Length: 114
Ligand SMILES: [Zn+2]
Image 1 (tube, protein in one colour):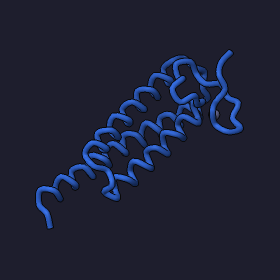
Image 2 (cartoon, rainbow, N blue to C red; image 1 turned 180 degrees about the vertical axis):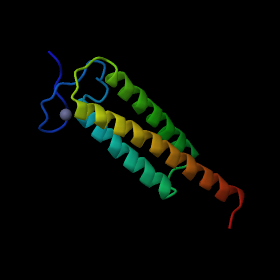
Image 3 (cartoon, protein in one colour; image 1 turned 60 degrees about the vertical axis):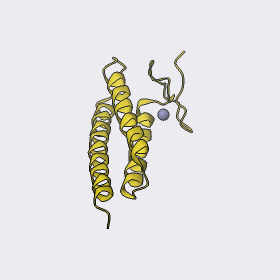
């Protein structure tokens, strides 16, 4: 029996190998988008120190890998869902770029205070 998604009111089954967050593909992509928003917000505010930023980077590549694994696992998906996965991958890539830029800005600020 496949597991049902953890999201409230969702009865869609979770793809095998997607056990970490126990979310269906759609809710997994929504979850990632939320995480990206939060990471972007925190680094834009300058709230993320070096360790935190390293953590964010790791999270991004981890999510990307998980997403690609699901996408290529042969789990049946509608074209809409496939497009959703691609757009979430794009979000991850942009988020990563964003964090890189924020990190560069921050190290610049540290080097030239005032
Ligand atoms: Zn779901």
